[in-house]
Length: 212
Figure 1 (cartoon, rainbow, N blue to C red):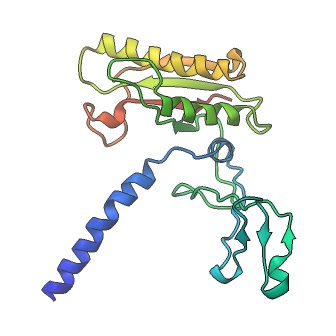
Figure 2 (cartoon, one colour; figure 1 turned 60 degrees about the horizontal axis):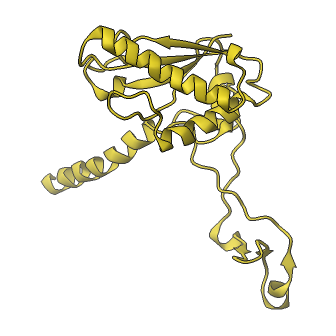
Figure 3 (cartoon, one colour; figure 1 turned 90 degrees about the vertical axis):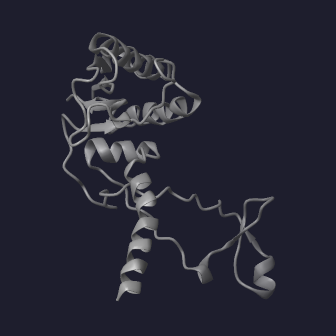
């Protein structure tokens, strides 16, 4: 019995880092942002069984199928694009409740005390910018909200949160999003995440909130 309990504890500990990582993933594609803000979620393609997966030519991009003489016939089939795994809670093909007030943590990284977007943050913000130009989101307005933890003075944190939100908004405008679709807000440490200590690093975030 003791051995069984130890085995279960070990398995649970091994699974925890993956679960925490999965919960923290930002939307991977523009379609994922559309899903988050409108509830219109695309149907995911089922992965083919190993025996049915076509071979992909590394040089031509053609799929080869069959065996014998058939295997030498190239069909002009584009390589299959693998869609990143959908975030926990999103159901394929389902329409989830979404509307004004719907928010997404953009999970953008900034250097300590700075409002400059890192290279990784710019790449993620570019995906968000692409989503805002999709037909489903094109007529919607969004608030870009900056938040900080409670370390340091409130005045400096409010100012930093606003500068970071402004950096994101300016990047979106430079990427083709009309400025009048965006509002910039900085809340500093005043709105920590539910159930999270005010000094926790998770509170250092920029969120996009659907306005209309």
